[in-house]
Image 1: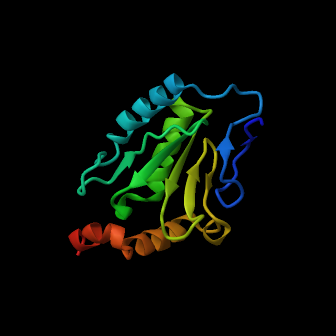
Image 2: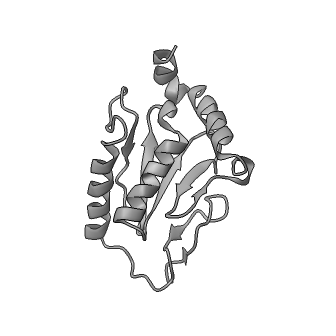
Length: 155
C-alpha cells in the first residue's frame, strides 16, 4: 500500500498525516531529515534558550516520521510569540523552503501550530487573530500541569 501524503498548507485539523510541499518531491531521507534538524537546532539558539532543561524555552524534537516536518516542543509557553513564529518562517524561507514546522500546544487534540514558508496555520478556532490567539494559547498552556514550573517562574 503506498504511503499517502498531503500537499499545500493544511492545518493539523485538516490533515494529521505525512506532508510534502508538492506531490513531485522525493520522500525525505534520514540524512536530509537530520541535516534539517541540525540546522534548525542551531538556528533556534539565536532566538531563545534552546534545550531540554526546565529553564529552556523550546527544543527540536528530532523524530523522523518520513516527511519534511520538524517538530518543536515548547518548554516555556511565554516564548510562543508571533515574533518566534516569524523567526521560524525565516529559517524555512532561507534554509529549507520545502519543509514545515509543527508545534503542539497540548491544549486540545488538534490545537497545533504549523509554520509553512508563507503561512502560519492553527485550528479554525484560533486562525482569525494570530496575536490574540497566541495570547490565549499561551495562557491555556500555562494552566496545564506540564507547564506549572514555567508559570511559577513567571510570577
